[in-house]
Amino acid sequence: MKNLFKLFLLVFLLIGARNYAQHYKAIYKMIYKADSLDNRTLTKNMVLEIRQEQTSFCSYDFYKEDSIYQEKMKLGKEVYQPMFDSDFSIVSNHDKLTVSKFFNFPPNSTIYRLDENEKKFSWEILKETKKINHYICQKAQLKYKGRKWTAWFTKEIPLNFGPYIFEGLPGPILYMEDSRKNYTFELLSLKNTDPADHSLFNNLNAIPISGKEYQKICLDRYHDPYKEMRNDGAFIESSSGELKKPNINEMTRTKQKFIKSHNNPIELSEAVKYP
Image (cartoon, rainbow, N blue to C red; front, top):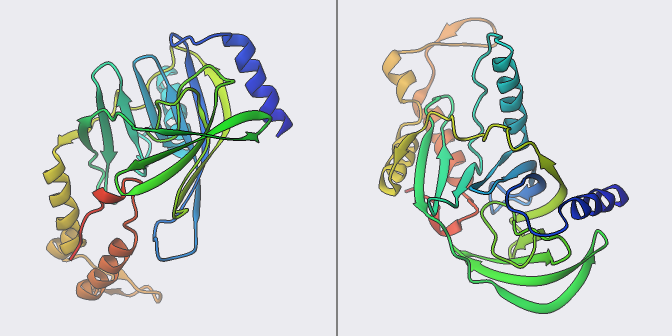
């Protein structure tokens, strides 16, 4: 915690005042439930890239893989495009006033982009305060797409950002959770980055789709998740090394059960309604 405090203090001394011309990288620890009825949680470190024209939010694993890929590309080395991690990958385009969500459904490598209007959040700022990592933080609440959120922000750091697409408070969000504790976010670090660094999503070859098209893709995947395997007449290898035809119907029922249970997005009201 002391190191985090020193890091924030260094950032504060460097920027002095609000300066949107600079670029920053924030790391949030996200603890969430993929299945809202299961008490087990998953933990991911997430990267928030903060730029004048846009902010982007993605997993640290994808960010790290893509950074290695870009460095090797600069050196002229032969590399493979890193596997895209579509969990919670989103970009707020402040210049275009749009939000872009990115999806893919492994093993299919196709990446889709769903564009929406940028959000304007109606925060309720309360008088309650507490200290988080040596910073005086103030409480704020928000109702957004099926969840009620509580956020703790500080005015002591002259920046305006938060996890995912949550922003608009008079300071950065250091901690945030929904009322059901399905999602919690904790700010771990913040630092300046080189403005020349590539923006993670600008070179992503994504197919633009509408909200209705996204729903159809999800439902088609649910109804026949092993369509390619069924059409190709694929065989699988048993534990004894013998090739045999898979039981597609049984595999489909298992996959459908998994898809229905792991349907707990941040934007809860946007969850796909599976039959």
